[in-house]
Image (cartoon, rainbow, N blue to C red):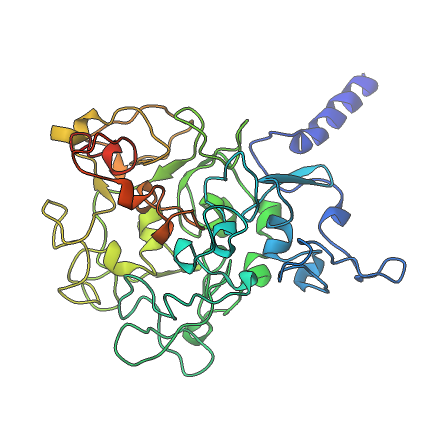
Length: 399
């Protein structure tokens, strides 16, 4: 009897370490990611990263890790690499088989695609190349998207004061992932590794319908709900049956700090207040998401309502179940939709009248081979030209 109990206990103890477990927490030897003193045989251990790239780690690093954000997620040519037995998604690579769902920063520097261009993506600091096109201006940003601080902080450069913003980071106060909490407003002001502390060890996966902390938010985007594709084609939007599922709402908020508007600050810093991916993008690119009447004034936003005509392409609005839109019924990774409820599994179907248009219906998150991080070549979208995909995925009769 004792032997049977012992076997059962051992089996149970191994469950969290089985590959494919929906918990998705980091497993394996600590040395895969950490070094205690950054020294082995009189050689530094913090050496993760691609040779010749500005993010090649020379250590030591915070949290004793062996590489920074891009030091682990921008290593080689493949879109997924193996480190000590664990698969690690790559956001910078030259893999000809395609990119991961978030896109590929390599298009910005020209390591992949049709040539280098700052217009192709978010110029994160690790790339070592500040964005010469935007020159510190946030596209669609409005006064209040970022707060003005007295020194060393974020300044809104669209309000006529001539100020600029600091270089975008992967995570933290000036980035997208982790805790985004401005130091000048009672927050931590953490960036990159410090803003991600503990998240990989607590990482949840699959259906993420809580999003009340960084580790159980979709792809560590604080406050964002969604379903992470961590199956056979993990981290990828491969086709109609293999893709991430995104959460969307039917009415974008009026972002701002005054009465009658929604403040984008939460318990974990700046975050999506309606839990949608578009609401998250709107914390920086407010004019492209909010309804008119927020901090940006009457000219901001997509319009005063969620009804057509719009003054900017709408997000967090329902794909109409009528006219040309009713024909979009099979999920397309060229123009993915969001769901009003976070599903427990991927679906190949689209439901006009229920599913939602979002920012990622048209754009990639990191970078693409097209200007403005679009999923397709906008110049090739010719009305009446008999084309397919892209804009015509939703606007099915205009091709």
